[in-house]
Image: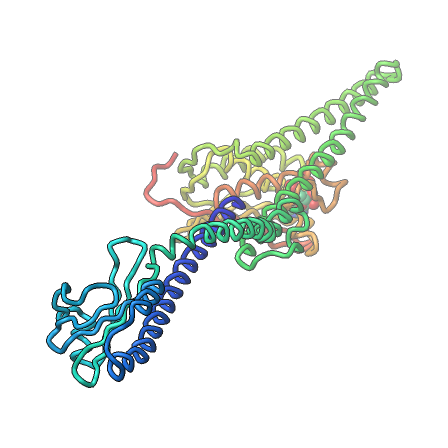
Length: 450
Ligand code: ADP
């Protein structure tokens, strides 16, 4: 970018210098022309008296002086015949009536022309003046032509251009450095990108980079937090497994009943570890986009029904009754994802219920939507926690979650899946009364039931 700015700047400067020089030469030449013609006009005014009032003609000395000054005087009769010429013999000269300056003088009283001499370097300036007696006095002078002037000026111009170009190069260096500086500062210090002074035009880009940078940092922070949480969650069941197995190893289990109790603890904690690891793997699959299998039309009612049936035993263990009402409705999903959503929501509704409570799962076909609700008569979720329960490892009651086999990741997985499926989730809950979770999917019409 900087190289480009430099090149463009120097190109523009070179062009401007050249144009200015050419224009200056042209203007100077024009002034010179005018000056020479003005001189000839005054000269003619003087000579007029010599040729009219005094005896016509010039002495030999005067002729020489005139020749030295490159001046030539010609007197032309009204019919064009040359009567007198200071540089040639008048009798040998052809009729001058048709010479442009003479023609103009006959017509308008005076006339001038500039003619290129045979040699390229010279021009001849003519000024003709009509005298009172009808004769025309012409004064001519040889002067350097524009080409000659240019030729003489070229060395000076070249030196001048070279000096100007060097100045331009140095200037362009500092100019481009000044232009690039804010951009370089931004690249060097992405953390303080908003504080760096910047051009108005760069602001949208800076805003985008800043928000991307913040996202990246936020993601990194979340990952770090997640890893720390996972390690912490793994520690407790592992410590329990290690502790109970050590007791057995050291012969501390005195009776068979006690051995069984320790083995049961080991079993429970190993299961907890497995569930936790499965959830972590599932979340990381969803995070990395590995779970992006091809979506297909699935019947939400059928999946919900199967899920409710599967959880009946679990519900009985918690003394909770689960019922289902549903209509056939097709959504775009994968069977696994739909099952995971249903399993996690129903499992929570059972685990956070009260003894003798109920869970009602419904699937409704509403216009272009498929609406799934999971309603329980459980402990409910206090308002201040309602927004946060979808965060990873966020639990309202940690003890209850752990004792019922919760990992704190179920709703995070649900939220992730629903985001992927383009579905929306809403929560209504009152502590002590119960919770109702509503998931709204886009319904698919005319698809084959799977
Ligand atoms: P967990 O494995 O702990 O159940 P989840 O991510 O599934 O983790 O849920 C997060 C938290 O939200 C739970 O620990 C619980 O406190 C609360 N929660 C979820 N569902 C319900 C519900 N139906 N009733 C009351 N609390 C709930």
